[in-house]
Every structure is written in C-alpha cells, then in structure tokens.
Image (cartoon, rainbow, N blue to C red; front, side):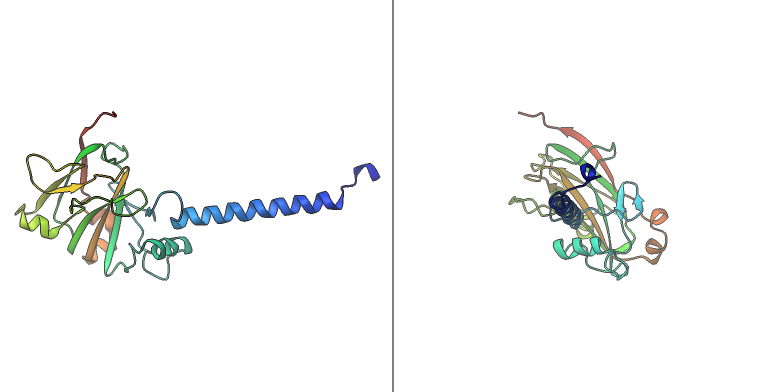
Length: 210
C-alpha cells in the first residue's frame, strides 16, 4: 500500500493550484460580465426586438449582481424601466458587426416614449474619441429635420457630402448603438416585442482595408 500513497506535500500543492485556478476563473468571469475586461455593456435579458436587446430588470432590485456591476462601472443604464428603457445593438440587418469602416442608414418611425435618443459607443462602451460633435440622434433632431412619423440618419466616419442627419463613427472601431426611451408608454413596458418598432440598420458601403 505504501507505493500507492500520495505525499502530503503533493496533495497540498494540488489543492493550492486548484484553489488558485478556481479563484482566477471566478474573478475573470466576474470582470468580463461586469465589463471591466473584454467588450463593454451588452444587454441581453430575454428581450430581443428585431435585434435590439434589453433587460427589464435594469435599474431595479431584481437585477442580478452582474447587471448591477455593469451599471455601476459604466453608469449608462441606471434608471428603472418606468423612467427609461434601454436597447442595445451591435449588428446591422444582415447580422454583420457594426464597424467604423462602413456607412449605414438607420431608419425608423415614431417611438413609444416621451423622448428618445440613439447614441453610438465604441466597443468599450465609451464615446469615440473624435471632435465631430455628432455621436447621437434623438427625437429633437427628427423634429428639427421635419421628418414627421418616419426618420433616418447616416452613420459614417466622415460627414456625408449630401448633408443631412449624421452620426460619426470616426475612431469608433467596432461599435454599438444604444437606444434610450425616456418615459416609455405603458404598452411598451407590458409588451415590448409587440410595441417597439425596431429601427432598421442598413449597410450601404464599406471602405476596403488599406
């Protein structure tokens, strides 16, 4: 039997290595989910309206610890759904990743909220570092352009020659869009999939790599 015995030192080392690996895996997954490493804020709580994802527990005590950690870290999604609801999207209508090298047209109709905005964030959930002062489109922009019920704007790294509403993706790399709807209609909270008319994102062209 002595040939089958395991040295106490080896046993201790194995337990120590296992504990270290377990702590590293747990800490790494927590940091990933909280947005401290890897991609930034991503919402995915079972609500998916035409590619726009949301989670109705955001801003409430029902939010899981990982969602609350992301809110605390990024400060983007702090209000309850009665005050505001949030949807994010990082792909176009073909399912391709949104990226700085491409030009997109975003189109939609009147949204069920008192006020709304669409804002572009880079892959780390921060505003791109550019000086274009054109990182968001909102209901006021649509009203100013007198678009009526339907509205549209372009996303591109440079201001389009034809003019018109534009959101800059310069220095954004792979990016996301966050749709905020403030004071949403009760029907939207009760039945988001049936009530939200999801904005479409059409890829128009892409620059070839140098």
